[in-house]
Image 1 (cartoon, helix red, strand yellow):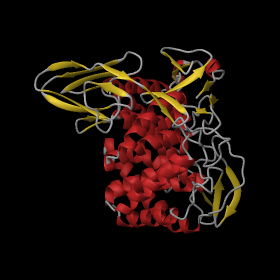
Image 2 (cartoon, helix red, strand yellow):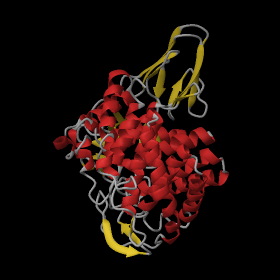
Image 3 (tube, one colour):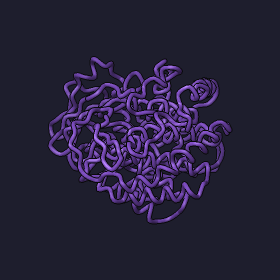
Image 4 (tube, helix red, strand yellow):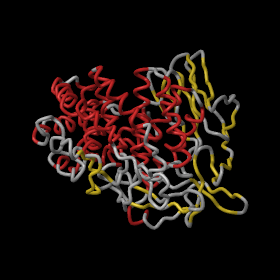
Length: 481
């Protein structure tokens, strides 16, 4: 990518260069989520490694190695974080935290082929994943009474040998680690473990139990990746069902999320928003159903622009759903989780040119084609063919030009090296409670920036890009959707 996504990736990388995310600090932030902070940092850095090239990539590699080289100082003898799992007191937060560590270790192995990493994964498989599997059948399935914080906390209550969290069902986040390990180790026992845990997860009524939406979407991502490995349709059907319930009960009107299902007095959480647009990407690639492609772009455009901060990190916002129409910053930065999860999201967004299709309306360049797109501010849509070829590019609802739009795609071709400028218009759409220009939500506010739209005698402008505002300014900004 060359445009907005690359700019945001550079901004996020600048945040992760902070000493907080380097040795030794990265290992000293785990609190009651063993492995969570260093795991997310490792996953983020290994993801951003795939976004960049040249000097930036080499700097990221050095950063990754500085973390890997000190792992032994902080792991237990079974090569994961925290105490050796006690069958009588299984902390779901420890499992969740170690899932991010496993994910990061797997991605590190994929880019390095470091034998140290795969040996760690083999040990984790034998000592943690395989023995733990049977305990998922006893996971407590009843509503919890709690007052949850942004970072989640242990409830100090053991049920069925599980030490539970306010982030309801976060134990199942480890399914993401199981699938990542299986992708690399190809251990049939792991396959059976994954099948068993998915079977247990289907007993979880995650909407009624007010489960954490992030945990639910992480599970859905894991199950979808397992479907891609097995091609068993029942897993794809399950993910589609889970995502449909999320859209109905867990997604806000502005394509972000409610931290727990049915708790609309909470806040959004960028970790879940990242999970949701990654899911949309792969659901579209698998099913070719355009609803997922459209959501992929709307979640990216309205979610990422709203949660990324000027320091490159990510923060939470108020819930906009139903009668609640005011959008404002809730937590300036969730440096302990969401700022790091952005890395994986930006990696997936940067890999949006697939089979001569560009899945996001953003600039892109390779050896065959140079695409410059800015639909909203500069109003530019330019395709330069470096040799004969054809490309299909996503366009939002309300896009009109001389090109035929089919399933939110236009196809542009040339039989010679040539630059093609596409003249276009973006019409205003009304969607449920919202007005949108293309995929970008319009809002009312005290101070409008950029293009102003007069709709029924009221002034609207694009949803604010939070990454343009200092913290003291952002906390006082309110938008009405």
